[in-house]
Length: 465
Image (cartoon, rainbow, N blue to C red; front, top):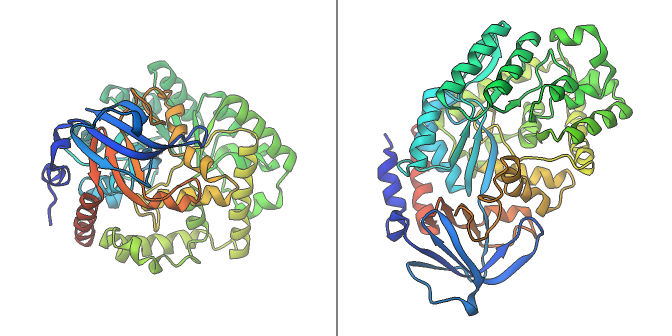
């Protein structure tokens, strides 16, 4: 089966909103994700891509255009997945016709793509923005910058500082939004990449490479740390060893055995002072470290949206490969490490470190695009966040991170109409983010019947992948 993005987009958006005419929600409970306040019985008017009015339904003018009765439902900003890989290695061929629309169907109206094939991701960003393809708005890095022997296809191999500078200039010329670094970037090359990114005006994000200390990445201006890499290492005297900066193997068991709370407190203070954002990908961290213990085959609802080859080939192969690299770490040690990561997130949060919700989908095992973000929000709650605080990591915080609170992160006049309509209150239970009644993407409305049709189609697409 070959999917044609334009035709499916027209199918899902049949009706007046396909031309971005006026759309009005009446009697909605509007959720303020900054304060947790809920304004009941509101009328929200959207014209084109932006919200133009929000007022009490009893005082609102008679609605025009398409009218959605949102009685008993909750309207809030659309979600962001801040760590995705839409066109990544073995899942790349599913990027356009499965991954992008599946994200949107799950209430995700924006993504930060952290490593994809360059031409594919740039085209997707343009096609979605032009409303020719169905998907969330995209902020992209293009391929990751990794070491000379990177195992990834969606990466540029970097061996020297000059390699790093050339890669940054190339990506800047192609129009990416930021630079993403991976774990195997050589130490000297990392600092060259950071310097060149600063010169050309591109933010730097990603892993703290194996040969670089977290304090050095902070000083180099790296804006985000992914997967908590660098923080845990800095909590051990291992980070002081000369061999650390050569990229020696990092053992969770060794770090647990040498964990120093005072060192952790010191790095947390540094991260908080420098305002380095954390995107911990907690659902995948658990899945990665406990890969030989989780039973992802039992999730029949989620697997219906995973590419068939992912389930039958890619995930089992990755499960075996990851498990082989952990044969020196007994399962109880890895379980302790996962629990320690939740504790670390709790302490970072208490120190007012900022967090972003991201999933790594679909690069890892059992990471179904869309669904995995809702699972990520649940993990934040398990780490001690309130439902509101967890919700902020996927709504308000991305707006703050991009310094675009005038566009995203609230349901107010002037904001872009990227919205999520839920059948139940997400502040009462974070699992209610899955109770989707409708999605608005750049002013275009996907009703529940349209989403049902889309999801039925995506299950067929998944079966062909």
